[in-house]
Amino acid sequence: MLKINSFFDNSGKILRNLISDEGNPNVKTLAEQLCRSTNNNDKKPIEKNQLRKFYDNFLKIYHSQASDDVKKVQLLMLKAQAEYAEKRLKIRDFKEFISNRISLVVKQEGDNFKKNLDAFKLHFEALVGYFPK
Image 1 (tube, rainbow, N blue to C red):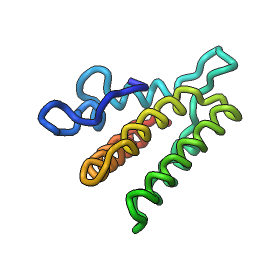
Image 2 (cartoon, one colour):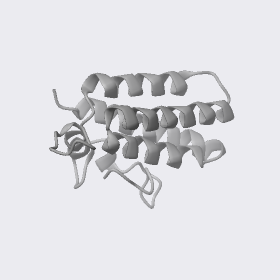
Image 3 (cartoon, rainbow, N blue to C red):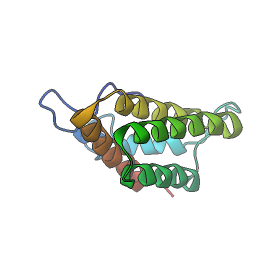
Image 4 (cartoon, rainbow, N blue to C red):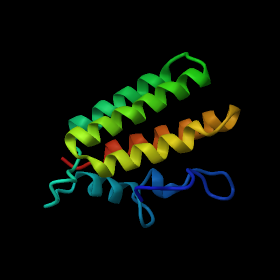
């Protein structure tokens, strides 16, 4: 569930497994995967404080009064920050998660951008909520 193709089902409703522990895979499983320790030195889990930092930065973008184009640039910068953090902290799974979700959002235009941004907010919020520790 690190990569998804859409936040929505065929009828345009947000996929329930992205915001709840229903279905398989679901956001609770994703949260557990992102915090799971591995013996791989090239891949480490993200810590809750790191996750919160990214989420808080996302919320600043989400709640800003900036235009959609400015928000897209800010989201792309958040994606770049995740790339940098992956190189420094080895949080590869989280980088794949954030990169995929931001790419889905920024490629949208108009109302679809707002709808996808809202869906990503709910998904990210659920991830933080289900994150262990």
